[in-house]
Image (cartoon, rainbow, N blue to C red; front, top):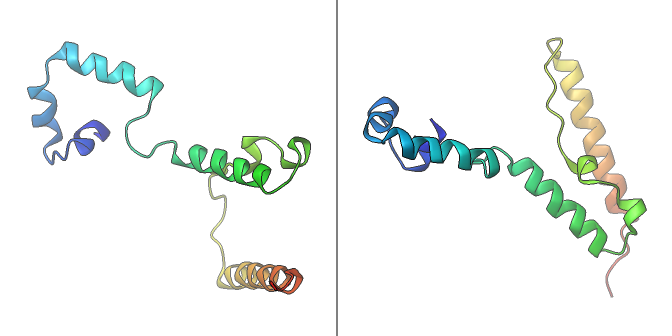
Length: 107
């Protein structure tokens, strides 16, 4: 399906029926090494974030590994209440406000 989408095809079954089996197998092998579509964009973003942190002057040990910057997708084990959502938003807002207070003004 991702291959069909990458080619701008709407009819996935029709697209697959037009591709010779040998060519489809080549695409399958290619997908193992270089996923088609945005499947691993989270990993690419994590590598970029890590590199930017290193460039900002942090040492390798303090920066951590790429996994420290990668999102973890976990199954939801319970329905989040409105109060839980509000608390999460307030915690985030307070963190951003605290970070902004610590910034040194530019001269």
